[in-house]
Image 1 (spheres, one colour):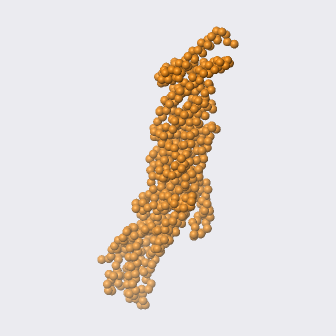
Image 2: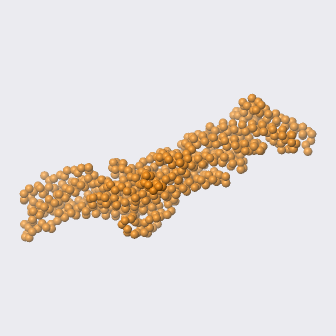
Image 3: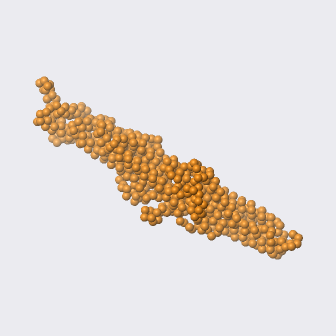
Length: 625
């Protein structure tokens, strides 16, 4: 029991404490209304006196039991709590302008520079043969929408591979100055101790949520519903994805992490987690609304690479999120991010399968002029080349083999692939090979639309050769596809070249045979001049026709074009030289030899150089003088 002396001392301390608290009652004092206890450069002694006064009053309340005294003290403590609440709010508000997200967006440790420099180009763009006009052609791979119609066709487009994998992690910054944190913690301790935790958390949450909204606005993260995102053009979505990835890294690694640390500095125990979730939950939901909308949007091939960028970014952020959202109350945010990552992975798998089917179904039937590279071939091979850039991610995502082509059936009406001959390669590689099998099958079908059989073989040769060259030019694609299938493709385009030569030149070279030229008697005098004239005439007519037509055909690859010319020259030139050498004299001794001996060997050698140049109009054939 307290002695009279101690009781007198307690009363004196209590009276002093009450005077200090009442002096700062803004409801009764204009000076108190216009000034702050906790202000920058203010009287720290006054801050200490006020806090001690609150402590004294709370100590007094806990030690008395007389109802009238409790009621009086409680009234005073209410005044103190109202004042501390205002001070708490003012400190928080005064600190909300110190965050500068623009500088963090430019920080290479938080966002990959490749996102800032990435540019959108068309998948058809390819300068390997310098034919700009052909490269501007477009191909639509038609994928049915949910209703089964073809109205949802899209042109495949690409965005350069962006390296969303990052070696950086959480980077906490001071959202509030250390001095302000100390004051906020002092106020929070007293409000919570007096039973005003709800009011304290509410003020803190309201101010910090407003600050969070301002940060999101500065980062370019706006409120978009799932429907809003899905109504945007994909070109606009691509830009937003790049911005979102950069902003999300700042949000998770800096903003959320720093906000959590601030809560831990001001509050203690379960209260800190309650405050943290009060502030970030709605912002986190807003942040992840965007990738969620992308993950459930209609699938089409042009979306694959940006979806993979989003998937990689989330994969990169999840370990940091596990560290930040590590309590039961914040588990829902982590679960949401993980589910979105899974849906993005599933969307990527679905798009890849739909792309394969779209390659098989691509319906164009108008032959490309000159038998050159079909836009579909460029389109598909550039797409596969891009896929190989993402192989690190896709090897983890693609776990099953293509559903078709499990065994070789030799069915000419369907694409086929014998997987048993491709043991030991990844499911991703099998999907890419399967896509090339369906592309080749589609190209074979398109070749049937050429009326000129030799041109159909040139078309197959050009396109399969292009496929081979694209694989060889990409180390990543070459590693995935492997030598075995590449050798098979090489055999296909070489076989097409052989078929072309047979279809074109067998008939021409038959006119240079000796059969049917000789009549009974000696060799020199037994040549039928009329038959010989018909042979030279037939050869000239056929060669002129072949030259006129095939100089407008195109073999875009310089080396392949030269090899084909050499090969046909090796058959044509020696045969013509021999025939001309043996029978020239018989024609020259007759009437009008110039009508039959129209071309020298040199003329033919020069004419062969016109073949496969893709001329609009065939050049004039030079004749012997």
